[in-house]
Length: 461
Ligand code: TRP
Image 1 (cartoon, helix red, strand yellow):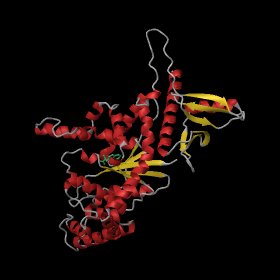
Image 2 (cartoon, protein in one colour):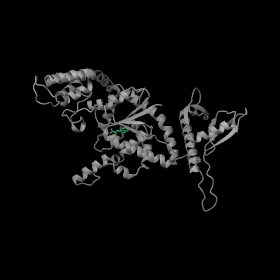
Image 3 (cartoon, helix red, strand yellow):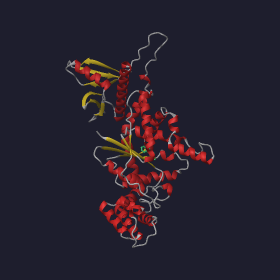
Image 4 (cartoon, protein in one colour):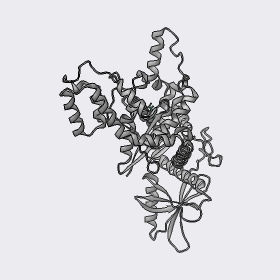
């Protein structure tokens, strides 16, 4: 079993050293673990919620952030790396989720409440300057996560509430539409990841204007920023309080244990702050110089990055397209030929709505088989042959209550898929013209199995 790990990066700035140590480096390391299926994306729709964001800045940030992650070693073959705005199924799902999200839940979002509080303090209208984008931000984020059924979502502490909301929204949807469409995502807060102090000792953050640039501006900008790190006034030769100096905290985030131990001792033995800054520069350069070279090279070839991101979007949409088809069906956005006649009511006998169904038959060799038919009679699946009709019946029943795995089985000609129970092939779908038709057919099988499972639950209760 693979664990799907997914996280988004809002494209509203230039990556700094804190982003690298706190998010980029640990995420890339995590993506290299066996059994991890990583999805990393540029949350560029999220970057639009502030009307103060200027388009040129958003455009530049998307490029810089993509180049940074690639330069830092992200392997786009291994990870699904894409832009949110290249996946139309995300805003589509966002609307389906918006319609099951209570407005009251969004009223409680910290980011929205903070804006309201600021407005109230200023004595202006509580919703002054607040866009619907800001208000609905958590629903879009839920769509990002739920569309890919991510198990784990590594984020900063400020995002914990958003993850709780995503779970809440997923549960509501599953409950209303009567099946486990969505996995409930778990938040992952990395406790052991470095939160870097900025130049002034507060958390390194764009909003405090205390950042050390990662690649932008080159070695000289990095050096200039390090030289501006605030220290105390102790002179060379005087012992320093290493543990409480943020220069040491920065050093430790990039050095192996023995090296940072030696640096700490040197400070306690009186190393001057100037020499300490020089040592930090050299340490950072050793780590970053090669990546910076790759970054500069990538920034000079934006068409290469564009290709990588478009390939990533294609990979992501392979999953998103059939899944959204299934969700559309779940909420009633169905093909018209599949519409069930409405019950006539008025005390008369209700018209029996015909849903999808299984039918058994004997094939020409005398074996027992069954078919899954859609409500409109379309053949969705045909089983393998069984010598014993009871065995065929048992598999048919299991398919209505257990997890059926659908898998692409396209080999040479046409597009095809099979259905598996416990890893064993039990049925196959009819051949399809192409991959898109196959994905749509698979989505119809899913929808039919969901409807049958729902009917079983309804008749049991
Ligand atoms: N809101 C996140 C942040 O500001 C970015 C984000 C958008 C995200 N969509 C996501 C993170 C989905 C994880 C999963 O950090």
